[in-house]
Image 1 (cartoon, one colour):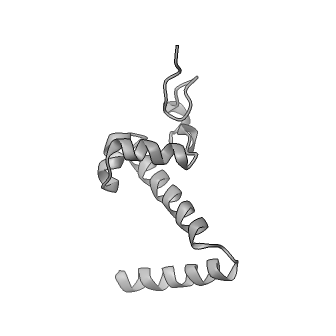
Image 2 (image 1 turned 180 degrees about the vertical axis):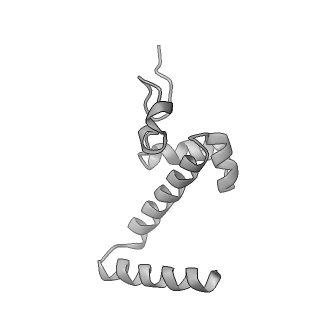
Length: 92
């Protein structure tokens, strides 16, 4: 498994470098996609997702915000709450 993963990653990295992407661009997009996949696999539950990622829940909330991840990106339409954005409550 590790050998296959290394081979696949090697090919992907060659393609990314060949397309002129920077390490910063690739790292940010990888982190975003990894977080999204984890949130989807945990039905959008931040606490479970943070535990699975090995980070604190507040760290995950900060990353979700800074990466521009919205609930619509990881929640099934039937689970989305109307009127909520970025998982934050509206201030009154």
